[in-house]
Image 1: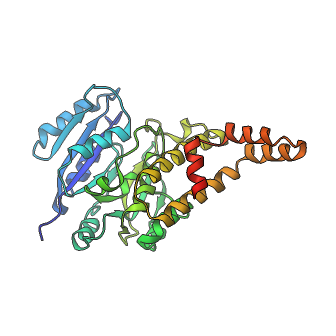
Image 2: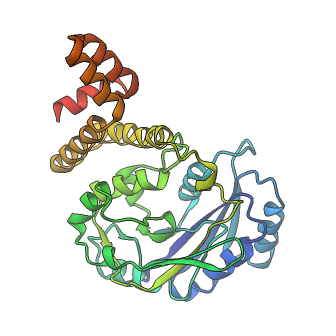
Image 3: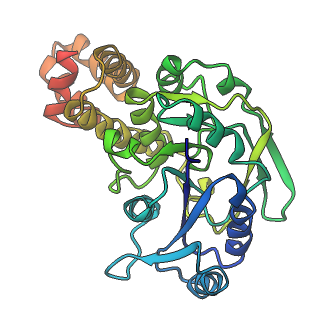
Length: 317
C-alpha cells in the first residue's frame, strides 16, 4: 500500500513573529508524509504575508500561499476552508500560525490511518503544551482521557464536556471526511472547531492515537485571533456564543443523515441546557404565580428559543 500523503493547512493572521517556527516544525515531519504546507494569508495587519512569501521562495516544492479572492479578512474558518479546497493530500492536518508541532507529531496518526481504512480520522492526538507571552510553560495537558475512549464514546464525551482540550491543531483526518460532514461554519464567530468536532464525532469513525505525550505547543498571548481575555466572560455572552453553536448543529443534524441515537442525544442535551437558563426559570415562576402563561411563553421565546424550526425539531426529538 502506498504511503498516505499529508496536507498541512496553516491560517495566517497577525503571526509575523511566529510563522517561520510553525512552518519549520512541519517541515521537520516530511519523512512522515508531509506533501504540502498550505499557508492561507488572511489580510494580516503585520508583515506576515512577506514572511509567508519568503518561506515559499525557500521551499517552493512544498509550501504554497493562498489568499481570499477579494483580498479581505474572512476569519480562521474561511481560511481553513480555502485550504481544504486546495489540498491535494490524502490526509489533512491543521496548525495555527502562532503554534508549532513537537517532533514525531505525525508518525502515529499516519501509521493508524494507513493500517485502518475504516477510520476517518484521529481524534485529539496526544497532548499539548501551553506557553504564555513570555514563552514560559503555563500548563501541560496529556491526552489520557481521550486515549481511553472508544470511537462510539467520543460524541457523548464531547457533548457532555467530559472530554476537554479539543483543538483544531490536534486532529488528522482523511480529506474525504469533509465530504461526509461539511466544512467549517464560517458564520460562527467563535467555537468553529468545537462545532466541527461534534459533527465529526456524530457521523465519522474517529479513533484516538493512544499517545499521551504532548505533540503540539500552543501559545497564549495578546495577539491571538481569539483571546479569551477579550471576550466577555458574562453568562449572557457565553450563552450567546453557545446558542449560536447549538443553532448551527441543529441545522446540520436536520440536513445530514446522522444516526438517530445521536440526534436524540443532542436535542435532549439542548433542551436541558435551555431549561436550565435563569430567564426560563424566572418566566415560569411568574407565569405560575400570576396565571400569565402567555407571558412566560413570550419570555421563553425572547430569551431562549433560537427559532421556530429549531423548536419544532426539538419537539420531534
